[in-house]
Length: 443
Ligand code: TRP
Image (cartoon, rainbow, N blue to C red; front, side, top):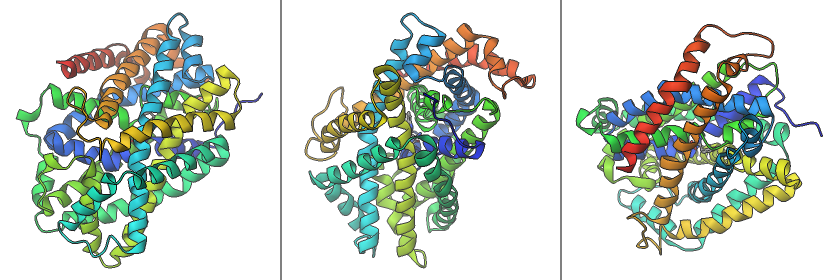
């Protein structure tokens, strides 16, 4: 059977940027930055993304394009031995991520409904906290929304690469960016917002510690969809004529730019709302943004547009989590695409039930001091993804070695001398950096 591939370079960039840009940028990045010292977090985040994140995005895409396989098959083909287990760990991790991602995406759908039916406006101070708490505290509604989201993901993935995934991403990404710019400008001009700007942009060097580094690394990997086979799978649909290095750069710049924009939008709004940045947590976006909407003319429509686009941004990411699992089941287990998508999706829904309850009724059940959501997130972002990135670096840097350089450019064309620097980063900087931060995180 002929393997699917992207229909154009623009489509690939939009789909891969669609994977990278999601709730990680707009929901998670701002509250993580708030919890970990603002500017110090931003600085370490940028160090991780530019220092080795970009290089690893290229490396993971190469593994996919060279082998044209799912993550398990890609590791088997390049490295053999016990390496396919690394791909399998990635596939399992993606399932874990999707099981909490769909819960947060479900809240986004709920807020879209609130925006449409007027529950959100007028946004009263204090009323917003209560609104969010009553949503996540109710047992059933968050799950209904989460299930709707997973079913949408399944339906798109069932349709395959060009038709579903690519088409959706091309349309919505540009709209999202335009709206974020408007909202950031408005948030920055709210009374009290300047303190938030200062907090976000000036690093407090006392906050530059192992915990911040571990959080920043985890966030960088999460946001770049890196280390657990998502990019490998998307890379496996790239065509021979594509320039992996150039296209990866576009994706990484888009992802990082949008995270910073979201920080400029949410953090000043937190200060304006009188919330201390450290106390925000996973509810931050939902608690502070409605006040920003309310302060704008036509705020009702802006709220509707924003939550609609956020749902779509989450969808273009969630499909890139389901796709590696489906690629694995189709390639290795000979399942049909549709059966594979439904099986994996239903597994995520089952796991989503305890995750959703861990925000409400099961809030007090903790393991290592973490709720189930915290446990899933920490395992995925702070352990499995950096570990997977380390493995990509070892496979591409040391097993493929100089051969990998020939795989960066369009087939049969050599790339510039910067590729030597890239290989140096993949071989030395990335493994040492990740290993050091992983150890910091554990102690
Ligand atoms: N990068 C996405 C975000 O920031 C999340 C994501 C999408 C992801 N695909 C992934 C994370 C694959 C890990 C693996 O929202």
